[in-house]
Length: 633
Image (cartoon, rainbow, N blue to C red):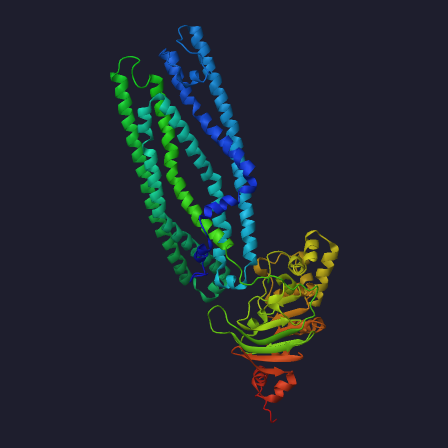
């Protein structure tokens, strides 16, 4: 389902349940690495909790000379009892140094291991998810691409998947940090003072509830921001691709206005979300500050007013308590940021997995027909077709084309010629009637088997950024692989195809010949050159059915004549459909079909159609700057 602006918000409807859980599914192949990363991450966090205990032990046992055992003594790492002599105090200090050194060594080693394991796993998940999303996107039907814009697709493949990788890479570790730090500190504080531990931990459930409310409130705003970003990306992509048109019509101010309007909308929505987020974080800091002040007063008054050795906290415990509180609230404040990142990741995951949940409308049947080769007989039987819910573009079209025949299609722009031929490789399915190849309905074919023997050369052919040779070699899988490997045999087949398409001469004159980079969409070539490269690419595929959709519309008369001679030679023993604006291109076709408003209004040979004085005769006369030929002449 597409949005009115061609965006991707509608694909969210394809997601069942929480999309983050679907993201977790991509982590299963790397569960051993992830488990090891989680365990080492917990060890890192626990090792970070050791230094305050060491500080407390040093203050109480060495400076204050208290006999309180403390956690390290209870664990058997320090000797019990009072320390009275200088030698005993030095020995005690040395033990503390060794414990601290071991703690920092463990922290350093486990930090490296955890970050490497978790971050590399996040990169692998990102790679797998992008590969699957791209592969699924390529397998969707043509109507999906017609209803969705390129900027939105790029936003999902790049921005959304990168955001999910960032969430796994950063926020997942933050969740471990919160669990390990809060759990470890809660246990340690409880051993010092259960009462003060409860006061210190009081904000934890409040922060959890506040984070939940924050998520619920901010979620629709982030969805709107993602939609706005997609629209802005689409606008920028369109304007950059359409730079020549903008320059030609001097529409700088108009396009700047449209970009500025969408940029302002993004700015306003982002600032509003920023205001909410900053207020939320400020509230968390205020709450933790109140608790810090409360504990400072309660514990301080207890130390001051209690008799010696009867205070709730010793001097070392008092210092350790505040060191832990400082570490406690840092990850707790990070919960709000993690909640913010979680919502952004969830919004992106909805779009990614919504796209993965989008089913193609054109699919193989349950038991597909897979011939080794097709002969090329094509039949249109009372075909009616329209895009989406719109009016039919093709109406009640019937046409029998024997194998090896050449059919020319003529008619005004918008008559339905290109649409009719798009039904042969099953880019779309008919609304009524049927299209058959070799007597078999195209809906019964395996798509790859059907399209393997059909080549299409469009009016504005798409060329990939790369070399001339790579674009021609794209027509044959083996040649493409050979070209990539530098196989001379593959290069010779590329040259043969170029010669057949009358492209070899101009390619040879390019700066680097067949290795010349042609730029994005082949921008460094002229329109006629691009079409000849596209014809060579199609011919390399050696199809049984070939479709030329006004393939000579952008070439000069001399080039058209050369391509026409090539086409006449190449369509021998092939079924060919030739859509032509210039009727001279199709005058030698076996059958010429004239379409108007989606219907076939005339058919016959060139001479037959001229003799009838109908639509074709009028078109021929107009192009030849002659009066229409009447049937009585």
